[in-house]
Length: 151
Image: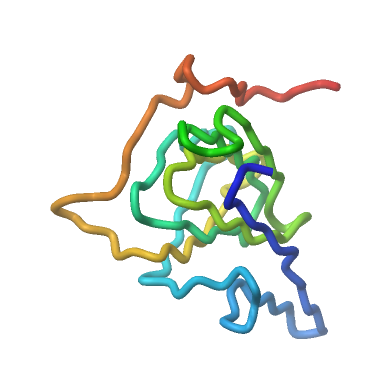
């Protein structure tokens, strides 16, 4: 696991009315107070990558559909510099991923319908000076292939 990345399995509580899932609780070990909460969607097959933050930690999950989340440790001073992590997150695998500052991340919708990702970042988004540093989805410096991998 990339240094500083944490995950926790989320629990779905279904009943005859529907289902409930807690996404973030302050009594969890990995809890960091969110500055805001937002959702973003992806259409099937769409990749949203790569970006990292200098100050912000992201705390994200997928609540509808499925996404393939990839992380790349581009922090030269990190003990896991150059490592890649991959997670499959969503309705079939509810998981919260805490992504520290400096770690590139992105995701691809792998479900047959639109996916919905919820993020609880530790910093407010600044419209004037966004803490968002981007690389292309296929940047050759990041050793990751977004295509389906047959093993």
